[in-house]
Image 1 (tube, rainbow, N blue to C red):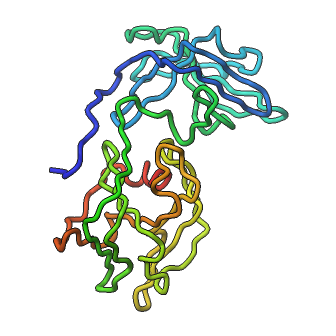
Image 2 (cartoon, rainbow, N blue to C red; image 1 turned 120 degrees about the vertical axis):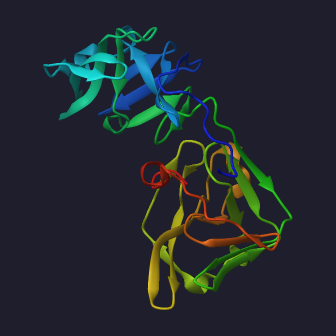
Image 3 (cartoon, rainbow, N blue to C red; image 1 turned 180 degrees about the vertical axis):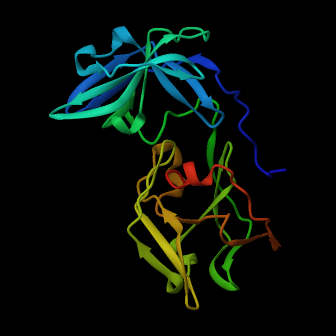
Length: 262
């Protein structure tokens, strides 16, 4: 059993999106809608489904054939983005037993250059209305170790509690032993926190452990308490909180989400 709240949304749940959604590709506005739907294709976050009438149909071309998806029968489309064609960028739901889905487009997130909720850009995937992310300053002492080497120690961590993920512990840089950290070129993004400004691998003895720590110098306004602080993957280091060693969590979607979203 995990020691953090799990996602509770069932697959194929459909809900209205109460926000204006816009997307741009190749320098042109592809869609603009206040009638989007959230569809949970898996429990961790939803996708947008967009009514045909709110999409630039002249930028999309059917590719022929149909696909049978869990959401219904869909027709794949390619997207013209400037001078570039992007195959399989979208699929049009023609038939579905799910309410509201026939006549909507489901876009491949990465086929689009930029997504916006109202006037704020959204990264990686739509924000789930059922996810809460809180950054709380704490006075509980914490120590981070790997292979017996102390990487960081603090009495004023900021704890980030995010639905469906282990608690993350963000520490002041003065509490981190950078003698064991090696700057990495990795950059990841999170729909709730923004885009990382720094990543580090960790050296213990002759072993280098890649991409174990990160920082957001300019997080979203909701997560401003973590600005400039450093966090480590709980799954890959030993964390001692209040003197007790925490069990390393098993994040079963680590490879698909956490490589993009810390």
